[in-house]
Image (cartoon, each protein chain N blue to C red):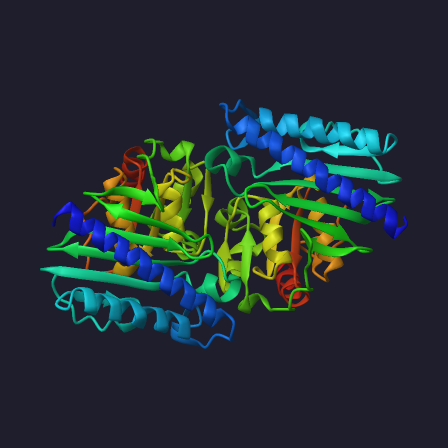
Length: 259
Length: 259
């Protein structure tokens, strides 16, 4: 796709995100409607649903034939990454949104024929949009972000998901102990932002495609590796334990997974 | 002490904190000097030392006879809480400061005859000061903070220290599993702020007196319980595994510690 076209899409989507943010703040003035999905820790609110509806409508107008994979309407019908595929995470970090009204994100991504094209992560309360892709570079609002330094696990903070750390799956305890410190934020989007900004050396968690699609575009553009935790290519239509990390930290963590 | 006097001290200390914040940002324009204290994860920078020096000087001018317990100059000489005792944590969350330049705090507290009088926690990057005490109430800058709702552990996010969670000491895994989610921030001050604001139901970690002195003043003023994790009164001159939590969550966590 031509760079001018990508820039137009980027500008358009940033305006959608601001509209979505306004909707979130309007909804927060009233009580939230909270429902359980798979259990007491897997929640959805009326805001998740309304934001996804808003963004689906925008995408359908902009690209009527594109496929859309969204957290709150995913029935697994999309079986292939051929053509244009959009990913929507309307509220990433729903528990943070419910309990804190802070540290949650809205994320969008565009892939064409399985190639990462554009990604957007909005830190809603801080009102920053991280956006771009291989052709445009990576930006926080209007400021271009540098490629993070290739720091080792030992010299960096690592973001992990609480559930795998507590269960010590995938050697999460060793990962934590090797690092300079483990941090748990409760939002994939906000965790990925820390890696993008060089504040964390990596982030590992079990995730669904809408949790990592946007970050994969942005991180890979800036030389951060994004694979399964055992170093394999990610299937964009499946859940994975995703590892995003600097080259050095990535190698250390993948090596821990070897039998 | 008269309320007018306390208000004067409060106003004076808020100005010190702004001065300290300016110093921190000046220092951040140059490389930090980082040294190990007890090991590779226990670090001190030139900024920790300079901020403590600044605040010690201010306290000595304001209250020449007061005792001072500060993180970077603590040689354990203070053996009693009789009279006026100040606590200084010049940079709380030093690892966050070094690695992220974010999520760190400056904390001060004043106790008289072991009674909490005034406390201050500055979120340096967000430039908010949480301050007050039993006579003044609890404030974020100029806004009075309400008493947080008495939420149970199951319905709230819990802040924990990574080391005790990974080692599963003090039933930290059970605490995590009972909660709506565990968060690890890496700064006592920023974690305590979440409890003060009702964004987390509690915070538990092994801490030294300067880590918890300010928060104890503010949290107890707003009905959050602050004790050792087995429910005992805290000795202000010793390290403890400190639990701060709503009454309901506090009861649940203390019960887990019983043999």
